[in-house]
Length: 484
Ligand code: ADP
Ligand code: GLC
Image (cartoon, rainbow, N blue to C red; front, side, top):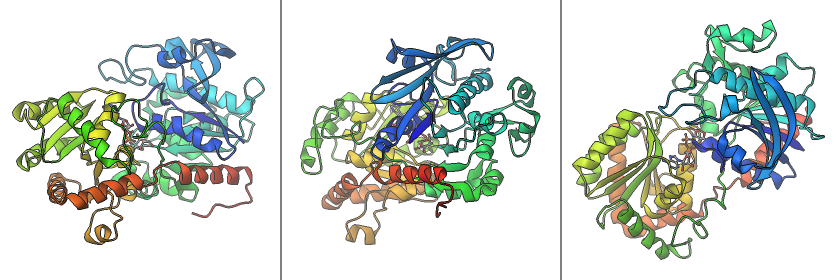
């Protein structure tokens, strides 16, 4: 079976968050099911550098006004197609925003061009290769499904995965005439979205199956609180929605062989983890401590509850804990953490930025990982934390609520607890969770059990890749109906 996976990010070539990790690791897991994935990605500079010498397969003299070449190549175990369109993708700044964090004004066109090419590949194949299914991730390539539904004669099954409903790709309706779609595509069944164009909305309508990155988030987005305006569409498509929780790449995130950490460890050698903790404290200029070292590696945004965390730093300091923050995001939240580090130089340390090796080192050294998200479709940091013996403290929402087992008395007694969950997700809820963490940390045996149970949790793609394989199989054999 051949899958065309279409994604704006893929680890290790281009990453702003978990989407890249999933797009980069799922293909490897699917291979075990005899499924071959080819991933189509925008030809950002980092992608083109990795594909030096790759062969051109299709040439476009004027793709939405730009010259473009589709190239095919392999790197890091991935089979890739990259859309080399320097006018769209060879830019300073990130994949979606400029150096100042402002959306590129032509994002509507960049991702329309990308989606158009994806639809072409789905329809005609490339260089003798043909996909059986197209699988688009998030809003950026969602328009490809709209092209296939409204402007193609080929019936290829269409899958859309929702990683985060908060990012929707909404653009002015006047752009519609430039997309090259028939008029009926601007309708309730198509792209029309509150009088604008909604790329994700169009994709949700055009998909044959919609997967959401956790069953809990799949339920949550049926309601106005989490649906972000798309709850009506989600409810209308209810029967075609399936929640499949993300797995992680067990090789990239492996504490017994991770090249980014100095002291390797496993469930059998937990003491070897300790020097990583010391190194981390040194790296962040914090004194040695008997209290817990809390950390967060995160986008510093409202979604992630980072403003809540910045507001309760005193609770950590008061209890004798340390806080390490690594991330970037909203200027106000960044400033709040920088200010906290200035106020409590011996307890709080912050490094604004995005650094993959450092993320690994923090997971390998901290005692607890804070993930106080207001909503979290799946979340990967808590899974990496589990694997690295760093106890996750998470908000009870979305994928966080189903990947972490709360350390309540029953779960502790049964030795199945893996972390701490809290709700409601507000400053007080977070304070109470921190106090629970301090109490559990003082009970050394209990904490060690939590850590060990977490490390034993199966966070691999094993089960979830089988669910994707089953879904794909059912789509190619329509008489088999999927339960749930
Ligand atoms: P999201 O995709 O919503 O940001 P996830 O938890 O699914 O959240 O994935 C986040 C990914 O981004 C993880 O791989 C995490 O390690 C990484 N990440 C987040 N912040 C940073 C950072 N400052 N430096 C390096 N990696 C980061
Ligand atoms: C999104 C979500 C996150 C999820 C990731 C990968 O970025 O915010 O919860 O883990 O996608 O699916």
